[in-house]
Amino acid sequence: MYSIGMSKAPDTAVTRRGQTVIPAAIRRRHGIEEGDRIVWLDDGATIRVIPIPSDPVAELRGAGRGEGLAQELLAERGRDRERDA
Image 1 (cartoon, one colour):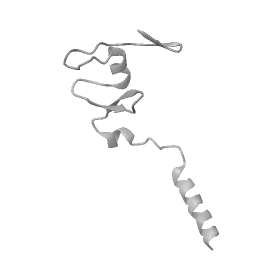
Image 2 (spheres, rainbow, N blue to C red):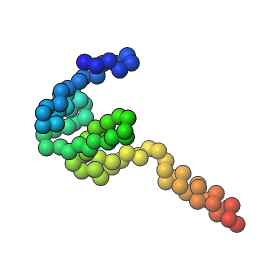
Image 3 (cartoon, rainbow, N blue to C red):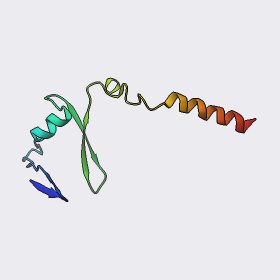
């Protein structure tokens, strides 16, 4: 385990072929299963590993529910009309 601030992060080794293992707890938490794809984001200072959902559209479905976005859009359009008049 590797300490980052107050939390402990699991560490893994990299093989000669550049392979590593995603710890089981992380796989379970993020629903990563055999055959799933991940993307590696390298910003030059850190590396982030992001799981890619098998169906990204289904994964996002309902993500904005309850935020009142339609009402907000209609109100914004009304303000635009008033400003342009």
